[in-house]
Length: 290
Image (cartoon, rainbow, N blue to C red; front, side, top):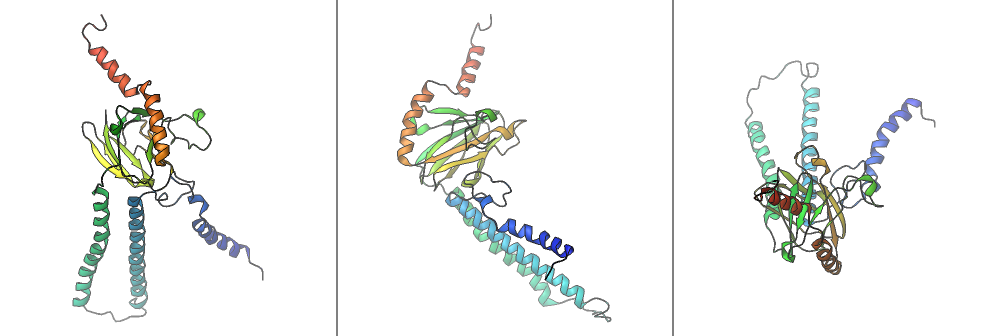
């Protein structure tokens, strides 16, 4: 049996989206967006898994409501058109229907509210911290401090195209990664030096504003090793999209090795923020510039 040109074209129109939606390699990247990606990145923390489950639940619920309303519209159009129902009903009130359209939306909201409140509680129920990292947003880079480990501080600046190493994503990789141990509760203290920024890592389900003069706290527990990328998610200036975030999750042993090396490397290389602060102090010093 041969298929006509119009039939083949119609088959292609419907088969191509189906094949695309059912294909999984485009969604295989961990910790970074994938080309033609639909939906969230693969979850790498308990909070992100809850966000993913809640999102999928809402999609199913809204889909059921949409098909139910569509079915009612089709039924009304077929059952009560002038041809099928030449003598229209004069009914003006129907107690059962009026109660239903008031009660059912309330029940739907209750069904949505229960997992929503559970997720909010999990996000703001901070477990005991195994490690604390302070993230400071500046125009246009991030600085990081490890207050649990002395004066360890460094900047994380976007890598230019000619600085990228194989496997590093463009516009997401930084010269210095935030390094944390796997399966540990990491508290992130977020603030800013100039304007509003936003520290966000999608795979962890973390996104919080960085406000000058204020410290905002969030947390995550990465369950898989690897490098996870995010970006500043606040309109903080002309280069706000060029403030990437790279978090490298490693084993406990590798973290101790990195920590030892980082204390040596960054001790002799003051951060950009420290340089700016020192420059400002010199500018304010008596007699400067005379």
